[in-house]
Image (cartoon, rainbow, N blue to C red; front, side, top):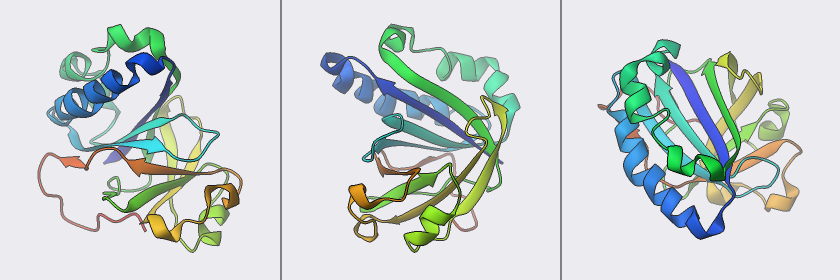
Length: 182
């Protein structure tokens, strides 16, 4: 299993609610129906210095992203939104078996500068490294945490970004093993 991430910002405030409705209510359910996708969840950054939106998926591997069904249901089916999508990045990571299921009242905390910032927050970071697509950032560390455990955003260590879930984690079937990213 691998972690597939898609990050972007959206440049047209007048259409942003419609974009979010499309992505959360139509695109994610379509993606999770693609064979080889196991989890899908969408996040919004509450810290600065990173793309606003983040989608995190658990997939079988890079071949899933090359298939016709993925192209029809996920990749490339949002041409009408393309002019407003900025700071768009895609990466495929290896290192953990599945994406953490971040629930209401929790946040996803990411760092691309090293695990130290997450450790300073009292978290147990898990490392992932890029193996395909942009491969940038090459390494990331992630953890989930109760939102009350994260200090004021202005006090975050450098390079640490915090995301709130916009959707529950969609799953193709109940997965065994630990789901928490702590």
